Image (cartoon, rainbow, N blue to C red; front, side):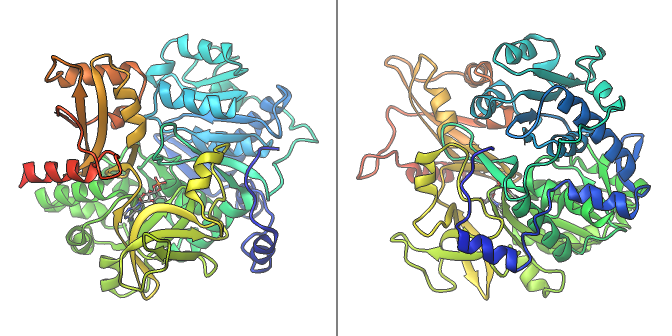
Length: 539
Ligand code: OOB
């Protein structure tokens, strides 16, 4: 069994009695479609159109082959695919035989994949020849040398290693193969992180399935929903809020897009009569600009009914312009891969939709807003968000020290967000975790600082957020160099980080050089002063 921190007995019982946990594995989503309408359209991916029956058959083929290769309960996998149908084929295949995957982002590179591999020791890695790491065989060989038994690649011609072959060949699923029990780990979500190494979030079938079913109701997903998947498909927002899995649950159709670039998405929306799309705030601004530049483009969006926006703070002025410019309703989403997801509701008045990030999914989501001493603050006052509930995890995978900080005695997870609560609705107004939110992409300051100081000329490093008109935030690295140096060129610094194998979105956007870093009274780096100095530059 894959270890995870379970919910206390009394809460688990309450979640079952309330009907949140129905003890169905996530593969039940696909099984239910097969029982209801197997020929309905599940996925459009480029020129390919897959029915639920196609999705089921391909995932069973892969499941059977993996089971024959000896994989099963307790095993893990890393899946790194772009926005293609195979991501979901692989997801259902692995879950079908009780193998727990991590869906790495396609933008992740050697450092992230290696860190995940070290934590879960995967027996299988499913990736793509399109990714620079897998263009030749060096990294795959390294993975094999490190104990990975199967590296299956999309776009590979050799039958024993080509993912395409593993999906195509029919094979019988061994009778004893099956998903893990619904109360146990189904897969891992990725934490945005605030620490040196990226953390993994074990999600159980029960908790994730509940968040999906409830999101489907809250977002009005039905069999006629046509959903554009333009953000990274493995991210919690795109996957389950209500996400691709929510659309599958309701029997709708998912259309894959490689990225949220407006013009190509507009064409897909028109051609596929898309009704629903999740986006991060910078993409919304780009879509709005594209329509302002050419009003005729609005016609392409005629079928669009609902835009979900979340992942980073969304300026009220941009929110207000969603209906007039894009011709659809807005639903704000404030969620986290760790669990808690908040939505504005479809019948909320405009003022709520434009000015808040919604309220929790579940009546049993317990939210506390706390001051610096851990005492609840009155409504209307900013405070730190702490939460527990039927789909909020209880501990990062194998991270006891970090868990001791992230959770309090009552089992509430402290998300590091500063929020204001009014009438049950939350507004995100700040952050206490040491993270940069670069247009929805999360960067753990400590991870990058540790990499920067591995450069022989850097003695101290601090990464902070700098306000940015387009992305909301960009990252700025403040560096102290060894004696005699007063600066290093950005290309040298970027190359240093890229050589260490970090994802490109984590590269600092700017560098500043200081003789020393400012310290607080207790001797910690005074990041507030660094941020203020950046704000002063822009003023
Ligand atoms: C989503 O998940 P993560 O795990 O990538 O990031 C979670 C963090 C939150 O703790 C918060 O700091 C920030 O992202 N965030 C927002 C926000 N939504 C997320 N900050 C301000 N306004 C919002 N609306 O980002 C995620 C997961 C599921 C659904 C939606 C987003």
